[in-house]
Length: 64
Image (tube, rainbow, N blue to C red; front, top):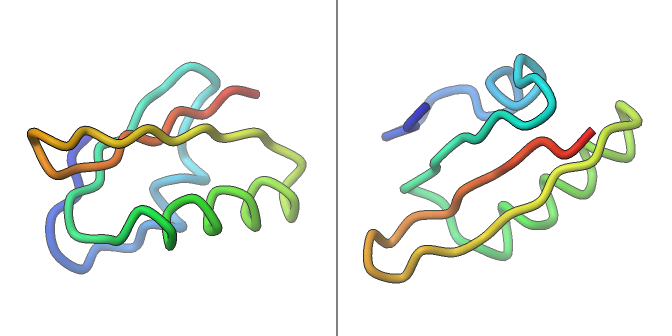
């Protein structure tokens, strides 16, 4: 999945199955990392994020 513009990130993240990845392009890395942490804590899930400097995007992966 690739999110561009203002689409509901929370809804997309909650729909993710373990192992699924989501590419985000229009957010800052710090915002994504804290959002992954907060949403994971609230819903008892684990997310990881990694930065792709060339594509200027962040990939979110649902771990569990």
